[in-house]
Length: 310
Image 1 (cartoon, rainbow, N blue to C red):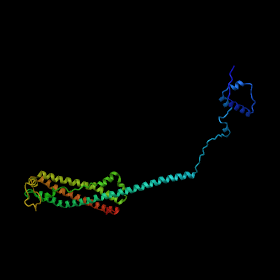
Image 2: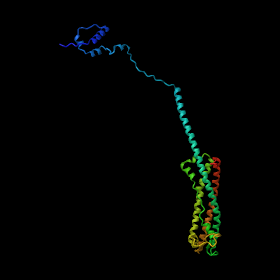
Image 3: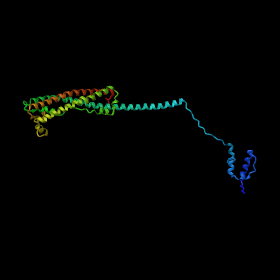
Image 4: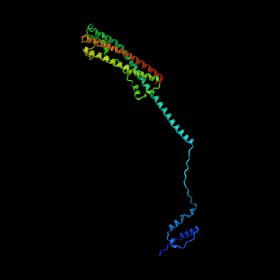
């Protein structure tokens, strides 16, 4: 015999009220099956809300998303704005780069013009030295060819000029080389200036460099013959201070005795002076051309870049 479950009065009233409203007749045939259920099971089965007063006011809201479709002109406007922003940024960068390159170009030209002025002054010195040296070489040729008549003495007034040093000048061209190695020759917008720089560079690295090498080799040959065929005793005494020139005011150089009497060897010695003189003459033409180009380039750069007041 099963035990009866005592249902709370409040729940029992709710159950009765619900069955009456549902229109279903009361079933008293199975009291044991009804009361055997727990209150929570009965409440679930009858779908009794926990708060019945709010059951009639509850609504189910389904969320919905509204997708705004843009018109084609809105897309076009956004594209144009983006394109304009990129384009203006590109233009601004080009303007800045153009300004930087023009400033750099002017700085290069200023540096180049200083070097060209230095080159022209050295070209002028070389031309002056050649004009002094060539007559001395011609006289030394005669001196050796007629050594017997001159008591086999190399006249100091000629030899001192020859032995003062070589006359060549080698422009270093640092600015042009820097522009060339860095690819900045493209910065020169003036075609005439660029052409003149190329001509000057070609002359310096071509004819002028070969002329320098030839002059240097010819001078070395003369010095080698002097070392072999001349006696430096007198030169050593005066140069070391052991003896003073008889008249230091009118002193014209150091004479050297010729110790070689063989005419064939003396002829080779004499010819070395003519060879030196000939190379100087050819080199002189290259120097004149280099000076002319450098001067024209200075005038052209001054006119184009207005560097007179820099």
